[in-house]
Length: 190
Image 1 (cartoon, rainbow, N blue to C red):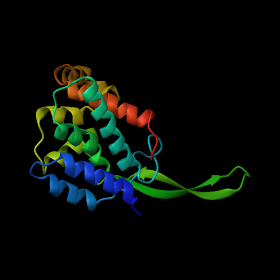
Image 2: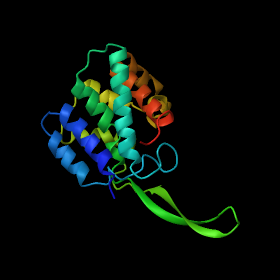
Image 3: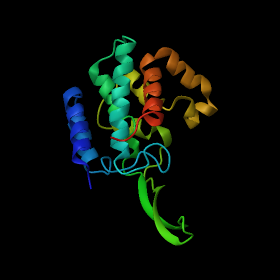
Image 4: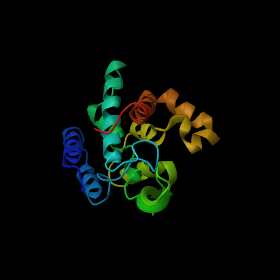
């Protein structure tokens, strides 16, 4: 079941700011996935129904604020692409299962939990692949999406100069990583 408010807010922001060729095709694809109902993670940031769309909206809002605060010369479209779409790789990524756990009274009860069921295991570059397969990205947008996890990115841990170079050369990537971290640790689902 979709929370209509979240879906409408996302789509309104998307259509207001993203106009390049392929954008409608990408939005249509998102509507055919669980993007608007999925959690953002299995147990950490917004591991609740609609968590993914909530996180995406929150990240966009945080990124918009940071870009304005730093007076970064970047288009509203780029901010929307990076903020709203950085986690599209998590669409059709999670599954809900049940396990037996003991409740506070010591009784066994079934509890729902999220697990990963990824049909396209491309890792942390999956969002970049999915977006760029239908819509052109600028190099700055691509770097911001690819390195949004910053030092938490598995590839960055193994090759730290790459993310450092991306951050040095692309202020949008730095702000996107900060906005994502803020949206994960400071924002609650609305």
